[in-house]
Amino acid sequence: MTIMQTDTKQEALKEPTSTEGDSSSIVESASEISTVIHEHESFETFQHKVYALGTELGLHFKDVTRIDGGYNNRIIAVTIQDFPSKAGIQDTQAILRIPRGDRELDADGDIVPVVITSDPRILDDAAVLHLLAGRVPKVAEVLGFDSTLDNAIGFPYTLYTRISGVNLASVLDEIPMEDMAVIASELAEFYTRLQDIKFPVSGRLLHDDDKEPLLTKLPPGPSERVEATMEVAVRGFLQNSGWDDERDGPTIPVTSSLYKQFEVGIKHALRPHEGYKPGEYDFHAEFRDKLNSMLQEMKSMGWFDADETTTTDSVLHHWGCMPRNITVEQREDSSWHLTGIVDWDEIDCLPPVLTRRPPFWLWDRLDDDLLPEEMQRYKDDDFDFFPSEVNSKQLTAAGANIKEVFEKAIIMKCS
Image 1: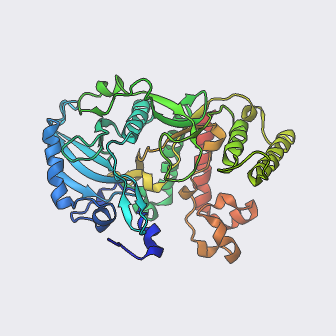
Image 2 (image 1 turned 120 degrees about the vertical axis):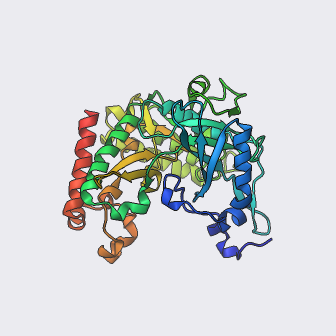
């Protein structure tokens, strides 16, 4: 079946990011994107399987409700009555997160799902959240998971506690600047907690399959069960970039310094092309040699300080810490506060200098139209990309204050 014209099929593979923390995004009807493009069963019938999953797990699910999902996951809200690890609490608000699975274009250009029998990313996510438990605030707790299709819904899933509040992206323009300053300080606290989680090398943070290769599911129950089973390991970065890389594809070796990251990255990004024969001209090698020469020249000129060229600990990095992955709530006094950070897929540990991109959206509230036309295509929603003389003209006084609050909080917490 042809879903749409060929020139728009790539757009069909895209979908808005998850709003799993946003209670205002709950909808009751089936999504055409989910049912057609992802070939998902409609929510009207699928919800009965969710209730059956609760019975299968020995839990009482009620108030099963669909929430707008994202590119990677289908999201369903459930209320668990008398959850065993939450003694004394009658109802536990939870999220059922179901990976959508990969999609690809067939020979005719039609979108087709990639058939899977299990999803190891379920284990990666659970292991990372276990690592964060008790160390980083405002992170959901894993209640249980199944990385196989052998369950009542027929899909891999993770069951999390649901973080209170709404998706920040949905209310960003409504929050007063003085409250954004409070959120800036709270976000600085979150960043510094991540900086405290250190690793001897950089790479992708995954579930340690070497220690627990047979672990496929964790029934909901006391949190100690997660603590007894989940461990993480640092694996090399995948050689190829993009969303289609496999979890266990060819990797670049892990490193322990910023300088080494560049050196290894250049080598693997510009390795000889497929079919290369010794003695043939290889433009990859020419580029590689030129970039290596530039890297050595930068080093000799002092572009890398001692911490960036010698062994240094890497730190945990949430690369998607943007409004779409942040939840906030308005308290009784009308003030807004940060309540959680979601979407812990594909987490890295990196040299600290590579994790310091500022959350520019905290203070950047101006439209592209206010910039000179020749600069609009470079803006990318980030005034920090511009020279100081341009930045100072575009940033409002309120925005500058929020930026100062965040910078001072980071300096104070990291000192």
